[in-house]
Length: 365
Image (cartoon, rainbow, N blue to C red; front, side, top):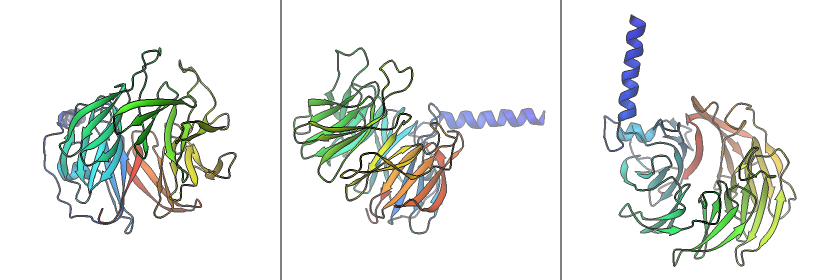
């Protein structure tokens, strides 16, 4: 009987937590301001469980604070935290399955407001204080939002009616002058080019199948990491690759096929713009002006995880350090490892469930 009562009590607590709306303020903590350098770990949580969270790591003291958004505001962050971008002391946290962007003060973790009415948002890219683009997995459009008024103000049609697949999705953003480039990742192979002055799709560039991440080097060339798909993929499957595009004329400079068993993700670049990093179970390094193939930099000590080994990667460009996450079984708390630029382990700490990305906070930002 006692065991049954405990089970019922646990179910009641679980149901109360699951039913909490994101605009309900429950009992919370008041943190002092943290105007110092730090790192936010964006924990995805579990799909449909509304348990995304933020971990905060003080870069000087190495203090770790878990679930800072919920503990401060007494309300859940949302369902599947995809990414986070900082602008003018505010964090814009993109919640993929919740279809919203939560806005938080980065120095005291207090809730400011939210942008809603999105389909399956992925990343936000600021063009000005009053205009930003939001990529989306399913909308076949790029959302245009006003961060100041926290409203959606328009969209850019990027649909491809000639395809048998639901194209185009959009993912990451990079900008060169007035041109914004985004990678069409899921069941796609295109880099889309947006004119940010007219908010129009003006061109597309074919690369390897499923380009999942992009960045620019110190010559303003665009680098694209394509995972190539997977066995049984209805869109097809090919060898993973790194591609390089001339952003002046949209020509494909070169494509480098990676090793046969590669399933890479999380392309990043260093502060000087001459070294690429990505994950394929381990951390790999590629010198953009010298390398012909990627080289192993950090060997993962983990075999478990959704894709085995490391799950996500972040580069601290100021300190020239590397952060990687182990998502373990995507149910228990994940683990973050902090390495020097040459691959020496500096520190490690726990995070939330499925730590999927990183966002660095500078002092007095």
